[in-house]
Amino acid sequence: MIAIRAPYLDIAVLVLGITILLLETFAAKAAKKTFAYAGIVGLIAVLIASFFISESSPQDGGGFWNFYIADALSIFFKRFTLVTTIIVLVMMIDYAPALRKADESTSANLGEFFSLPLLTCAGLMYLVSAIDFIFIFVSLELVTISFFVLVSFPRRNPVALEAGVKYLILGALSTAFLVYGITWIFGVTGETNLKQITAAFSSGKIDNQAATFGAVLVLVGLGFKIAAVPFQMWVPDVYQGAPTPITAFLSVGSKAAGFVVLLRVLQPFLMLPNMQRLVVLIALLTVVYGNLAALPQNNLKRLLGYSSIAHAGYLLIGVACFDGRAVTFYLVAYLLMTLLSFAILIVVAQQTGEEISSFDGLAKRAPFLAFAMLVAMASLAGLPFTAGFFGKFFIFVSAITQRQTALVAVGIVTVACGFYYYLKVVRAMYWQPGTNNNTIPVSALSRAIMILLIIATIVFGVYPQPILNALKH
Image (cartoon, rainbow, N blue to C red; front, side, top):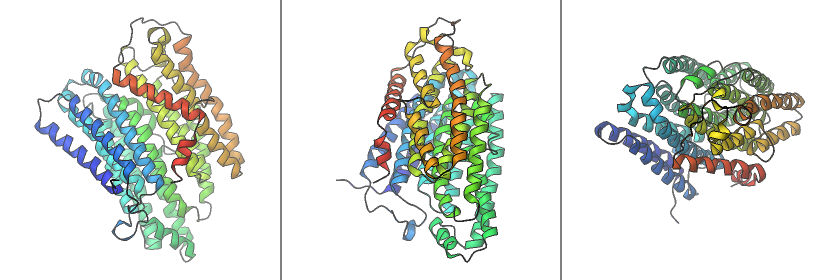
């Protein structure tokens, strides 16, 4: 059997992204969608290769590889990132006409639009294997700078530019907090490697106050990345203003990598006094704010933006209880239902718009799209027989096991809020009369992706074991 070292997967994606970017520059007359298809094929090849990783990969982070780990968690999330990027590239192909319509000047640069997600994917793959603060920072910057460009890609669109500027300023601010926190941690322990920091914290020979201050600064920096309250202010405007596929990528890929980093970083930090209480408080605030802010929304992208804050809160409940399996399953469920909803939104918005009212009567115009959105909304709300139900179930079970009564009580109450704003979309599709009777065409590739997402959402809502077992190996 062919054996592949884990770091080669990340390098392959990075080289693929750079190659497509260079080809796009020198092949001006080539059809721009060709680069998207090349990226999809390349990522599928890397995804297949990820199942042949050698056991001699730098699992223990020893020697030169003391900044890198290839454990079950990182390998799982490398595949998670690859799948997310493949689906986002498919969504980008559907979104390209809308991008040209919004800004004619972007037509010549669509190759860049298709290549940048590959560089983002490489950064995310590095990030989930990073066990050293310096490598975490470098990987995070690769991801963040790529997103800065992608969010404001329609340069003549003032809404996209506003979103890009807000994301740039607040992203730079969060990076400053993160770097300053890392500096304090290094000053206290003399280490940047997470394993060495854990050993230093365990020794009891460090200044707990200085270490706690550094840990809080690091949490602030990561809190911006995962959109936790009170660091969530950028989410609604950036999600609404960014191109829809980039919003989906931000919502799923960036959030997943952020939570993997948070799980790794919190392992030593939880030894410090009151750190778990701080994470619990942030989780409570995030769940309450995200759900309440989503209630009055009439724009679907903005609603999904606020609901992503709520989902970050549920994930933080799992992080506060340090249940990696519950967090992992929730992230998989979140990938399925969020990418499905954004894929449908891209297709529908090109004809009618992004408002919830744009979905009025969709069941008559496009029964398949209406059913797909029904599955996505039901899973986001946490209805039984969907992956979203088990995602919330495992999170609440971990909170009950840890006797976090406040987290369970607030979490269950806020789930009821989700039923209201998610089912508004279902009501519009099935009960509201539509003003537009035009059929909505769906490409064969997009339809295939939607069908796979629907099947996976339902299958994992009935049989979650494949995801739960994936981290045992």
